[in-house]
Image (tube, rainbow, N blue to C red):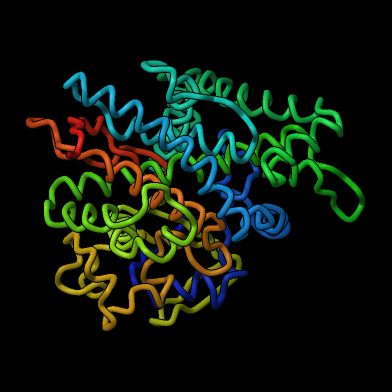
Length: 422
């Protein structure tokens, strides 16, 4: 495998992710480990293929689209969640908050991006897509710690479980693609008139290269999987960790309530972008301590010298942990490991000025396309949920810890009691 150089300095991260961006790629090992699930999608591709994915997807994200999402689907799906929370509150039973957030973001993103009605929030107790998806990304992560995974997975039966999980995931992806392929021009126009936009699947089906070649169903499947992991996992996990910290910090909870209670009942674009400053700080503080993609790996294409003088040879790998950077006292000060939303109002910290210091949405040319999308969705959820409910941790459960995964899910359920606010 060769040498792996671990870094946790924003200056070095800027060199890797921006200054000498073209010299650091995903590399063969990462592609080999991840391709069974992610294929050649935006997360696992480099060069021209990555640029195609990014350029095509970028057309989805605009202020006009964000306004329509908040006014429509974000509110619609969150109100569905609130109806479930009302029933849980009335029952007095505990519920897994992380599981609910994962179902919510899956339903919302699948509908918004692929016009696919998964409706996992309504299927209490059963979530075949989510179960298969979580297993697949967890098993993929384990491969990075086991260079003999191709052998040991066959020996332990993990390979069979992985194939079965990928089949379930693929069935949803190909169903969405097949449905869209069969759509008439009149049906497409009616759908787009109803939603007011082209979605991700529309854009990638329309894409053509210089020779006029369109994407195959397999390539569209890779688009589906990559964007679902971005749209489902990251926001749901960020909200789960954030609410865990809020439950431990009553003063933070009270500040959120004061903010959401003075705002109108119905969230809108202006509200979530201008009036929810404290809630935004809480969300970003959760992301700082619990970044959705905690570890990343790059491979050097050619020899290089890092700003601190370390020589990097072609083929060597750079490992950086956004999770570690967020807890680095040299970067964030002596209170780096504490949950302090107020740091986002500290002009001296200048946290928002450096995407390499706060790299939870990645950084440089590969910075997350959905950063604004995720933030607006999260703030809409916070406004509607925290206006109506309080969560309390079920006593006696273990403090949550990250599970093996490409992202940062909690290993165990986040069990809470739901209490109606008066």
